[in-house]
Length: 79
Image (tube, rainbow, N blue to C red):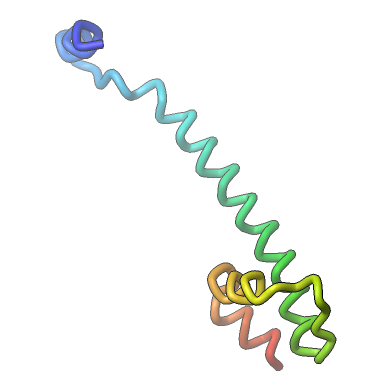
């Protein structure tokens, strides 16, 4: 690994450069998962606000709603 890193420096390029595309793709997939999760938790939040709290929604899920959903959307949901 050390030898490979030295060779990269000699050629004038960063050894980690080829991995960059993969990292961006991974980050994009993670953002997509967070967005789908926020939609899921928004539904739970609306259910809670309508007073239809069901046994399957734990306190943890309701807490996660506050983390995932931005304040703007949360205030819209409260209206």
